[in-house]
Amino acid sequence: MPAMGHKAYAGFAQEVVWGTKVVAGMDFLEFLSDSLQKTISEKVQQGINASRVRTKRSHGAITVGGTMPFEVNAEDVTGLLLKNFLPTEVFSDLTVGPATAGRHVFTPGAVLEPGLTIQIGKDVVVLDYFGGRIVSLAFEAAVDDFLKATPTFSFKDCDPGIAQSPTYSTEPALIFRNGTFTVDGSSVPIASLSATMVGGLKIERRQLGSATILQQAAGMYDISGSFNAYFEDMTLLNKFLNQAPGNLVLDFLGTPITGTPSTRQLKLEFPTAYLNGSLPQVPGADAEIMLTIPFRAIKEGSTELVKLTLLNSRATAY
Image (cartoon, rainbow, N blue to C red; front, side, top):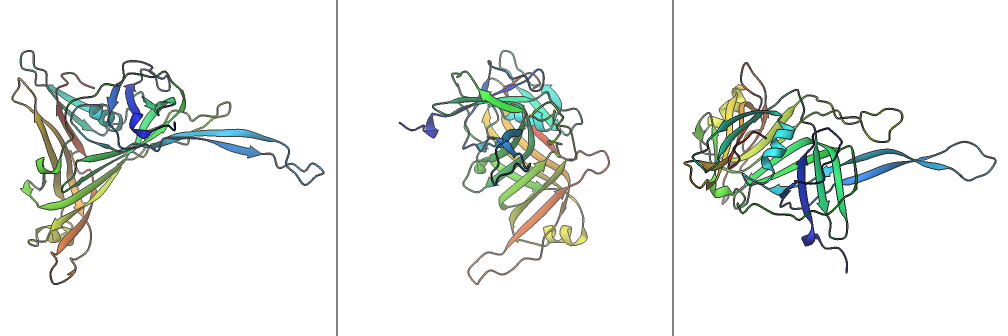
């Protein structure tokens, strides 16, 4: 029988030392697909050899990476992934008696996490990807859908692994009906929003004596996105035309945390975002006029470039 996708699983663990894979104690993620790939370049010798054929070749550089989109809930490995991309965490313990809860606020930082090991079981084969860091992290929110995230990974290498027995959180994914979007504290009706956060990691760092990359190095963050809003007044257009920044907040609530007054939550905040775009168009007599508003996050003063708040049942920092 051919290998089947429904038999796949994905396990995640934080490494103690970058590039040294973890083989046990993983947390598991219900993912939608993966494009993780290992490529090995081919080097063919070009020397003239008194014939019309090439006679020698060798393997060259190893490159490992790809994407893994998933529907986001406040538990699972969401916090581990956020910490890998935004390594500065401020933790608040919200535990009440035996019921654990915590607030985790992630922002950009210069000191990277050690790395991730991701194990992918693909029915007939198990592969361990190690020395992993998130290159970019994209979020998509839309009407009648779950909140989706797509991390893009870079790894040192991958090799065969020993199969784990996956277990999963019972928490459902965050869904559109429990989401809100505000600009400067005022609710704005939108149909969809996408945001892409690029970490600027330096990936192609190599040295003589090794086919794999050196440890990824920190670079410049770049954050942009867009949202589709109903055209109800000139507020958003005036921000664009006057180049006035806005505080954009996308907030999703999940289920209550049993035994505490807290509710699971994932909040994406762009404290200083400049709106770009163009004037609205009339699509037809019987169509609503919508605004497509691109934005770019900028760090100004003491505000953060981006702030992601995760509230869940974990009562320790990631």
